[in-house]
Structures are given as C-alpha cells and as structure tokens.
Amino acid sequence: MKIIRDKDDWQKPRMKKSIQHMKIIGDKDDWETPQILLSSAVVTYNIQPLLDPCADDKNSLHFFHHFTKRDNGLEQEWLYDAFVNPPYNDVDKWVAKADEQNKRHNISILMLVFNKTDTEWWHEYVEDKLEVHFIKGRQKFLINGINPRYCQKCKKTILKVIKKCPICNQTLKINTSPYPSCWIIWRKH
Image (cartoon, rainbow, N blue to C red; front, side, top):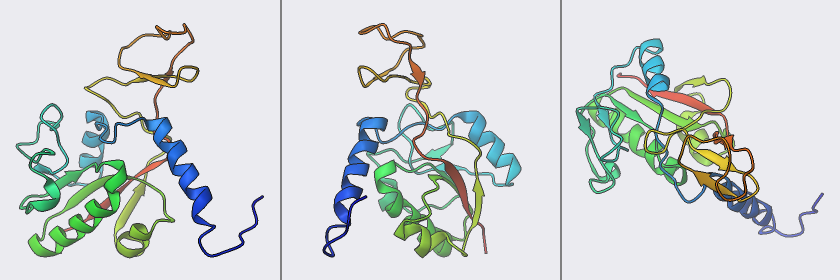
C-alpha cells in the first residue's frame, strides 16, 4: 500500500489506472450501443428519443435527428427528446450539456454512462437529482456493428467474428466494458 506524502501524490496512482483503462478499451472512445439495449431501455423507462447527439454517420441507431462528430453535439441545441451514449473521455461535458438542454428545452434525455459514482460530474449532476437505473453485468458495446474480440496475449482488438487470434492463435475474448453501466434520465419538468 502506498503512503500519501503530499497533496499532489494522490494523482499518481489514478493516472496509472486511467492509462491502464485506455489500454483495455484501446484508442477508440466512441463505441456503439447495441440496439437491443437501447430498445429495452426505451420501453422500460417510457422515453421516446428522437435525437442522438453522439452519433456517427454509420451509427445513428436510425434516429431521424442526429449529430456527428463533425456537427459536434456539444455545440448544438437539442430540441428533441434524446438518447446519449457519450464518448468515454468526455462524459462530464456531455452530462453538463444534457443538464443544460433539459432545463432550456424541457426535453427528456436517456443517457448511458459508466457508473463510476466517485466522479465530480456524478455528484454535481446526478446524485439525488436524477433517475438512475443500474444495468446488471458488463455491457458488450460494438464497433461497426460487430461485437469485437480481444486478444489478451497480443493486446489487440479484433473486428472479426472469429474464435482464435490471427497473430498468436490464442482464444479471443468478447470485449466487454471495463466498468458497469447505468442509465441516467432527465425527465421533462
């Protein structure tokens, strides 16, 4: 166990952990939401989103209204009930934006995030303020509609539905989220 000696020392182990996490998820920060996961939440929580402000051209989940990276949903007005699965590294910005848009436009927002309840954004925007629903187990997010595989030996993400790594022939694991997920919901006022 490490002994903390000065006020800045606490950040060192945390940085190592975040670097470790980025190795697990790879450089890709905008994983796709499985349609069945979203459809289930829409029915269960009675929200009919018409906007996806975190979409890309290939993965708008068939929402009529969506913003791509080019459009930058953080700089747009959200005029419709929305579904948001924000990029991992910018969750705090997207939660703040959702909070602002809910208040400004009286829209409902269904957001899928990791449930790291020790973060500043969680305590500022979510804790005791929003509806939260924890999802059992770790989610299997997609890349280009495929549930990617991961080789623990090569440390490579494989975007093919195969059982063995083409580099080292080791059995591949289905890539799951490194953290549990939850739905947070802003309701119309």
